[in-house]
Length: 102
Image (cartoon, rainbow, N blue to C red):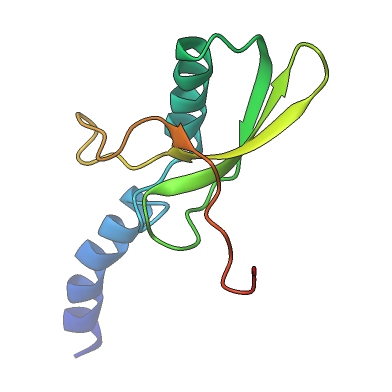
């Protein structure tokens, strides 16, 4: 029984380790989207940093853009990839208001 359980658990374990974020959102994808979005808008971007987890499962992750003038802008950028060949969403948007916001 133990050997059978181990053999059944192995494929599930491999699938989980191949997908570090089950929502499919990835920091690197979001950072690339943020750079492209800022470029399209003519922003003088110095750097971008995005979180590594999509906490609400909508395919967007929170990012902070730092402009060359020292100002920052908080945005949510698409970070969802399908099988590595397509992006479900694209670009960035203003952050959604939280449930407690009035």
